[in-house]
Amino acid sequence: MKMKKNLPVIKIVKETEVTYYESQLEMDDDTYKMLVEWGKEEATDDDYVNIAMKAGLTNYINSKETDET
Image 1 (cartoon, rainbow, N blue to C red):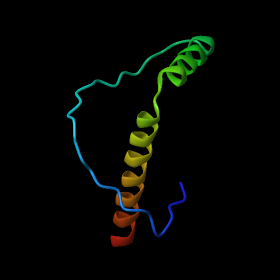
Image 2: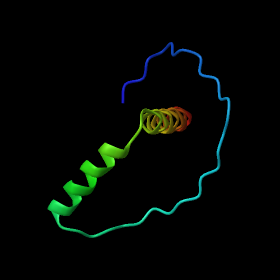
Image 3: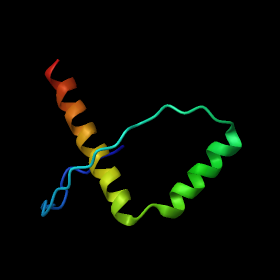
């Protein structure tokens, strides 16, 4: 992921604790594709923003850890 140097200011106005489990699932390719499509139909813009924020923060932290070594 390529990050811009000058990002706009983002203010956190609310946090919600979310408890969930991640599972390793085995399924055939057709079932996997079907579930991916269902997920895309249900995902909201807020879901995509949260995914992008998590990925951006993870990449930033990883780049700083790499710089320190």
